[in-house]
Image (cartoon, rainbow, N blue to C red; front, side, top):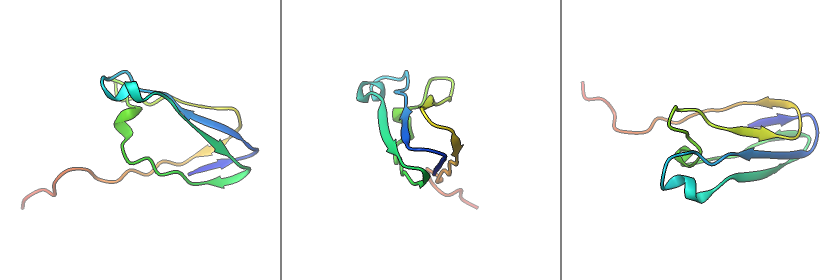
Length: 75
């Protein structure tokens, strides 16, 4: 979720891992106020060091929530 102070764009930069980096950057339009985005496969944007590049033309707050991936631990 992005709480943008003004309209603009947000770009998630392509990661540096092959083959997902071939999908390129993802640019989304923002409106002033709350904007919700769901990115199912974050590996497209993840770099080898685990970081993610996010660029935006506006100011505001970015909230990120992750879902658990993988199998439940066996007890």
